[in-house]
Length: 222
Image 1 (tube, helix red, strand yellow):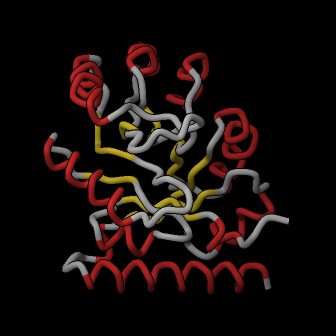
Image 2 (cartoon, rainbow, N blue to C red):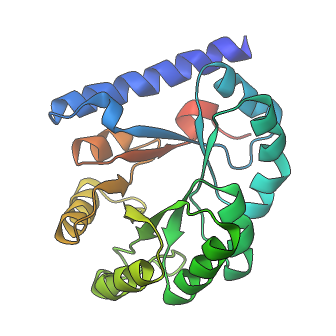
């Protein structure tokens, strides 16, 4: 029953992604669905894996380290993305565990990630998080600081894939997604991590290559 429910939810989200992509003249397979599994335990995640989902996102290194090694042993081919803020002292663990890091947001983190990647001999894809508003609780570099941070990331041999943002809560997301897409074009970046359960279709129409969907796949948290 749980697996059937997961299959239905995944199919619904994928259909909506495909429809939004076609509306924008894009191929549906140009969008990666990242299932946000933060706070969900292995029994809640396995039905999505059984239904074919292979890309997952976590907010915290420690939480991911506690559950994903065993899940990956059970199912080869899992791709794991870190979508939450990364503390510098967790950089080495993050580089070993994750295949992509969506929250590169400051020079000090760039430096420690570069050293961690050199040490580990692996280089997860990196998204630079851009803070497009003034919400104090959010991470991200300002658009004005973006050129310098990108230069530092490239100098440290971080594989910068694209940009990430979280629009301000309660506001229409489209203008913020459009701004992030413009910043990516201006800096020669192809990938955009933007859009969550409430706005991923809008994000896809505006160029998202990675949408971070939790509630629409796992249901509301109790």
